[in-house]
Image 1 (tube, rainbow, N blue to C red):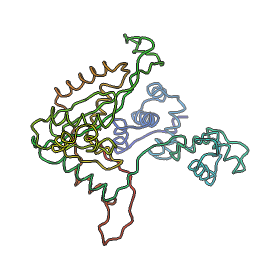
Image 2: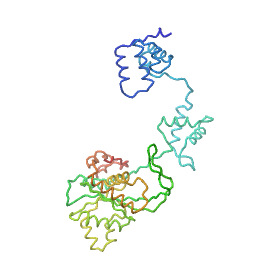
Image 3: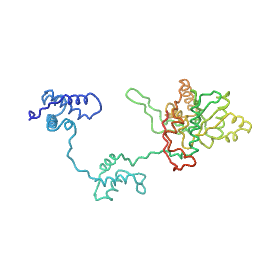
Image 4: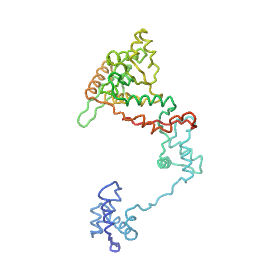
Length: 386
């Protein structure tokens, strides 16, 4: 039977098969077919080929036949396999996609496979449809109607652009000890205690802790970050009020930068982040004294990514706070230890987004100057953090 199909490869075909086996990502079945053809060309018997490659003798026979009757490409590729016809026609599949992209039925938050199958039965002549049929057609069209992605759509107008470029120009300035740039923000945190003592890790077993926990209240973290030197400060407070913000600003001027002439502070648009908070907290002469050395620069609304301290807060959460901390006292100790180590490492944020890059990346979203007509656009602002 096998005498009829004798494989003789050209040098080009041998090189192509050798390259296929030497590297790259290819299906295992395709690699085995290449091994079969090379072995057959070398005169190895079908029995030895089947044994060395790990296939049956009938597989060796079929590969050799497909090469002799066809060509190398046919021998390496998959042949159409018998099976049932697709249950959904092209029009019915388009109807499924349109249904999955529409609003779910009243009383349901999202589409499920069963809901989609039942809806398609009502809209077509099918008596029934399996959830697997629906799942496969949705997968082919890269649809997951049960998932949602939340993102913010800022209104990119002249005010947005002005604030964005103001902050970016601050970041791009040469360092000036007399006029430092400090990013400021806050982050709430829950104090979570254990109900049962966790079981420590040991060889062959990871640490285990109980799903039940005890909520011991909340705290707040005020975080300062110097843009031009490796320094940050984490201040833990019980609350996040205007009085707390004012105390942070006075601490910034009197404790952290006592010799600076003017401190430029980058912050978001929270209602407590205002000059009025200092007048609300201190006597007028004291509030005025502190404010004379401060200069507030606000990021645009819905653009907290422009505040460099947001990245630092993410590092703080990942390195220190991603666990259960049960008390205010321990939170103070843990954040102080993290701050000390991070400052000792001289860690800094490598900010690379500039005004020039903003104008290139967001050119279509920039407002049109007076005299030119162009519709205002809403864009999804997605800038990588560095």
